[in-house]
Image 1 (cartoon, rainbow, N blue to C red):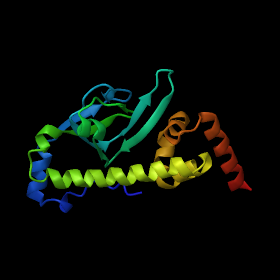
Image 2 (image 1 turned 90 degrees about the horizontal axis):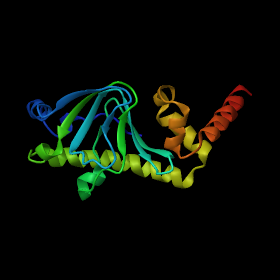
Image 3 (image 1 turned 180 degrees about the horizontal axis):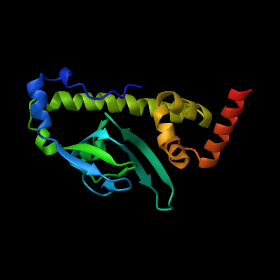
Length: 188
């Protein structure tokens, strides 16, 4: 899975990259604090320099689903809000202390290179979404977890089991059983 950081050389020279970065507003976000809540209207492009965040949806009955994780090198926007103008449908919360660069999309849209940057963001997010959608539609719980270990191995140690399970669309009990089964297969 290609989640490599945005390569400024693809869209600009160093001088233009420095100009783009001049629009960044640095922010430190403590663990367990929200960058935005569902229902807000985030006019932000977020670049993660350090730390780990999750995009989460909480249902009225208290069940939680994790839409995505973001970590070092990731850039993201709330595309639903950006395209529709409707409020965010999910919250973004820091799981670890984070160092971020925040860009106001309303400012970036006026820049000549915004179109190229935006296209890159769309391409990266589309690849991630396509892969996850296909995985959720066609793979069973164990295959989903194996995929997670293959493509996001560093996150396995950084996340509690219940959050991995919420991302994979399975219960923490199922994840525990899968881990035990895989461990016994690897030992046998």
